[in-house]
Amino acid sequence: MIPRYTREEVGALWSDEARIEAWRRVEVAACEEMEGPTDAELEAIRSATATVAQVAEREKVLDHDVAAFVDVLSASAGDPAGRWIHYGLTSSDVLDTALALQVRDSAPLVIAGAEKLVEVLAAAAREYATTVCTGRTHGVHAEPTTFGAKLAGFAFEAHRNLERLRAAFDEASYGAISGAVGTYSATSPDFERRVLERLGLGPEPVSTQVVPRDRLAQLLQAISLAGAGLERLATEIRHLQRTEVREVQEPFRSGSQKGSSAMPHKRNPITTERICGLARVLRGNAQAAVENVALWHERDISHSGAERIIVPDSIILIDYMQHLAIRVVEGMEVFPERMRANLDITCGALFSQRALLAIVAAGMSRDEAYRIVQEDAQNAWDTGTPLRELLAARDLDIDLDAVFDLDEVTRHCGGIVSRLDAIA
Image (cartoon, rainbow, N blue to C red; front, side):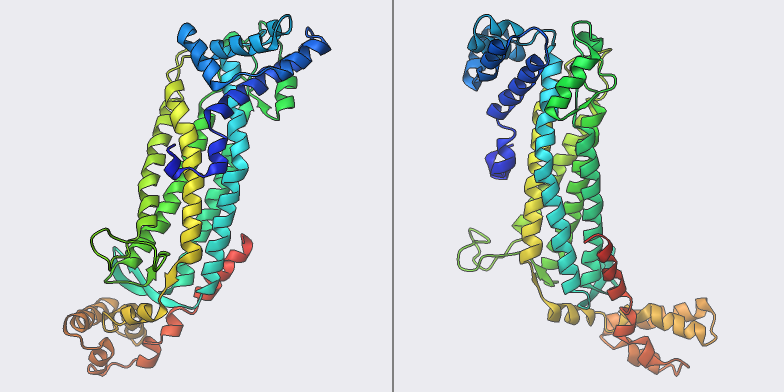
């Protein structure tokens, strides 16, 4: 992933240096569980190094990155210790197990961000639990709700994504030291178990030489879904920041930040737009991960090139996007007065359902009551005449004070927000 969208800590786990180090860790762990190396040889193996530049230079000759790495590391260990490096292993043992190490080591950072997102969304939902605003369906005013109830839904979604990420990272933290075609012909299941236990990974039950790619597909699907949740949140804030709505605004540094190179008045929702755009990348990566599942027979490397891009990029991006969203929620500006003003745009038409139910309860058929309320609600909206006045003129036997009681409409919103106590 490009530096612009990479947070330093997670980016360090996916650098070329980190990849070579993960390979080294696997090779050293394997040597430590072999019966052949002496203590002196093990010490030499543990001290052996291979740099990115050295491996790249050797790869120019061999056209095989793992073989190049093995040559460089073996040479660094020297004779006779170097002969034990990669003894009985195949390339996939190193690549897949090392990738699982990188995935596992990334998990705490991504999970911490997901947890923080749930926390800040829940806090904001509680803060605005009674802040009344317009609920919208199809982008059109529907009925009143509260901004807190709205945010509570995002918090619960974020929590579900947190749980999915936890499970998916666990499922991807499996390695294999099973050799060519996964039959342990040069090693043994017990050797694999000991090596992976030393590395803190689970052993793949049947590796066929490679760890099945459904594990990584599940991880990238979970990441993609978490990205979609961030996109939904970002899309909501983008809409609410529109000039005609202006109920919420993402953080903007007055005095230093520029919204437009040409128009000084602009405060564009660039952060939430960035989240939406990057979510598309995550979905594309998830699709590629699913297509990587089907390999020829025991293995091929059609998955390899794509994985070197989509796995680190997806993990780095979801970490970055989560922290963007945290920053937006913590720093967003909320305008309750504007929310109340927008409630009046339709001149009371938002109370149409309550009027309908009141008229039906008074004895009129639903169809007839619906036609009356629909006509008056449309007239209210079109002419700017309050719906309450239009209904009053019909001399209906209903309690208009009760119909247009805003507190009554949102009476359960506080209870909705209180459900957050179960997760945050």
